[in-house]
Image (cartoon, rainbow over all chains, first blue to last red; front, side, top):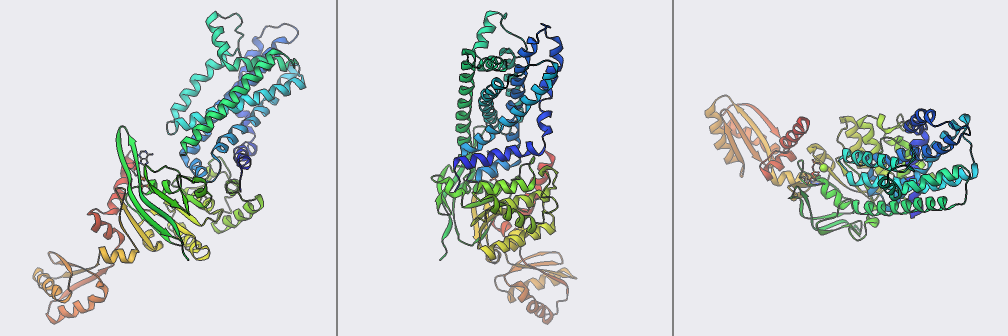
Length: 249
Length: 331
Ligand SMILES: Nc1ncnc2c1ncn2[C@@H]1O[C@H](COP(=O)(O)OP(=O)(O)OP(=O)(O)O)[C@@H](O)[C@H]1O
Ligand SMILES: [Mg+2]
């Protein structure tokens, strides 16, 4: 007999397998963040101590996770259209496992991409604090799982209208990204923008990532980041599970 | 003792599309006993897939009840799921996955151990002739290969009850025969109960012991192919004469010889519909000979399920299908 845990493991490893079989897909999906890195890094003010890179790189790590994970629902959308999602719905796999297993898989490419970004930037003077970076990735993993789950939820809701999925994803992605101050700091932004930024959970995650990647392990910033990521994680899974149950009723 | 595998009562499903209600399935009462092989036959949009989707817990009935493998589809969907297999109209195997990987994860989904799933996958890869493509990505497989993979996936846990939605669509004649062979073997070796939908008349005819004809969401006939044909369409004897008046005389004579025959005359041609037409033909020909009516040619056609459908609905299933297909192509 299967349990929620074994079912989640089944779905997780099924999702992960194509990634492992074809690891280049991970690099391919992070071309955009790498491009941002290559184009923006030379524009950063040269402070002499490399602090610009210390500020910029954690943002790019978050961005890479954001791009890959927010689009992951497209995989489910495709499987809804071809029929393999239906085949899994007829199996006794637990409904929550169908979404939790998929969402958990997002951690793996996120982690691989973070490692690549860090390795690429070290020769240019990025200073790595291993302990902080590991905690940073745990927080980002929580966020990723929630975001992945929301992306799958969007796929379930959009079903046969592929363009709806992409329209919503694109419309939400860039404001989230900019408001979180990933590419440009918003400290000097007008009041309304800063308010909007404070309402964006991603802002807290990005701030925490920056603190942690710079070796600052215990601080309020880190605490808020952890909280925001946990809220996104739990909320995302909760909504995703609900919609998956309803979609298959 | 055989138990009932499927028991539905007033099973109904409506869809609302743009404020209009589509009654896809209307009050279906269907019992399937253990070990039966049932074909649901009907034109496009008849409600075959919708019926199957309710029985496999994919769709909630609007009203009515269905008990599948001893479990109620709405109250215990998981109980139903773990006891049945399903081969849908689409592709069960994910396009980005490798064929063998999908077989393994399907086995895991049904609670098989890794070792058991692996052994079973090997077995199915062999018997469905998938060896050459088992380690390839599904999207690179041909349509027929993909279909065979879907069938392998549906069989991985050796379910006691198997649903197949148009299993032979996209298969060439050889693979269709291969599938038929598989279905028969499942019956013979494991006593698997099977419900399949098809609009291949020949398939329903040759494969199924019981054909349930569905039209507009309702069962309009339910019996063995032989009895359906006997009840709803007789053999057809086509006779050709040299002269019209010969055909006229032959018609009168035929009605005297074959009681209950239906005749239709067009020019020099005479069509006679009657049960046991093949046995009756020599007698008819002797009768014509005695009356000095020369016969130019004779042909005896056994009835098909299409004749049954035509008789029941006044429409030809064949036309419906080709008509719908060409509509799809045009769209
Ligand atoms: N999800 C849905 N939403 C709206 N209408 C639907 C839906 N699914 C099926 N229908 C409608 O219900 C009717 C029965 O469809 P169904 O798919 O059961 O037919 P079918 O007998 O399987 O046909 P085919 O031979 O083409 O596969 C059709 O009129 C179809 O348009
Ligand atoms: Mg159908």
